[in-house]
Length: 326
Ligand code: 2DE
Ligand code: MG
Ligand code: MG
Ligand code: MG
Image (cartoon, rainbow, N blue to C red; front, side):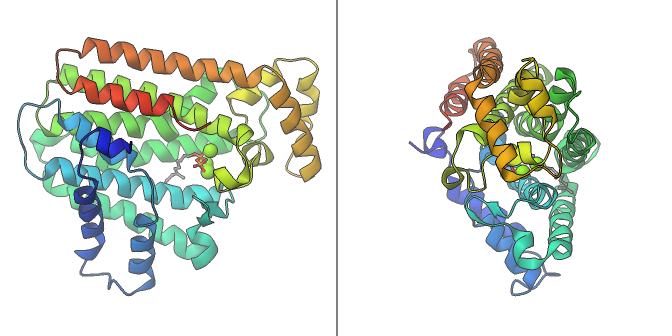
């Protein structure tokens, strides 16, 4: 079953709200390249995980605040899509979800502007909610993007850095992936006036889910074919990303020198060879275990929230993350 169905969320309503963000924009004619690109991007699929998290969060509150949760949900997707535009440029990824990445069609400069435009529109959309009483809205409208950028910066600093520590790997994964998910749940909850305590528990739940998600994403770079990934396998390794499986493989004295020999000028054959060696080691299973530990941590928080009917939705999310195709 589709995740939104299992959560009993009207995905069309969310999609309409996201499209509205562009359609309502008087400054950008829908027919312009910018307008078209944004529309195409948001219509190009995607599971709307982050908006769903906002809505699930909102079910823990005490007050119906009308369209606010829906607008926060739409904003979350906008931030995510904007970040993917930049991500594909930075990662030199030509495919996104199996289709040409935006910058391959518009050129890098236009794509950068489109990404920045989208993230600025989020601040504008949410500004109506950012009164003194609603400081939490800033966590989504601006803090979340700052965290994404910080995570990407940390990742860039450590490209081809085979001395990166586990803590540094975890910190950049937290910033580039997990904190946005955590923020979606927390902000959703605060938007319907949940208690701070519940909002913070949801934040920790989202953090754990997000960490597991990024570790799985890093594993997929090893385990999936290009057809499934929508981009060439081994991309991370080729670009010097020392992800969790690589970190574990580096602990093997036989593997370590071969991995360390990978640099920006390595041939495809050399990268493919190292990819195979890492796949044959126990590194993938160890990384998988860390992902599982995060899911267990998230599960413990669901237990703590069991007096709220919406805790069942957290279970649904958890199950979805646990079953993600590997
Ligand atoms: C996904 O990592 C991480 C995405 C965060 C990107 C954030 C950036 C700052 P992956 P996949 C670039 C955004 C800046 C803005 C909005 C102004 O592992 O495997 O590369 O899906 O993800 O490519
Ligand atoms: Mg990427
Ligand atoms: Mg990236
Ligand atoms: Mg990735």
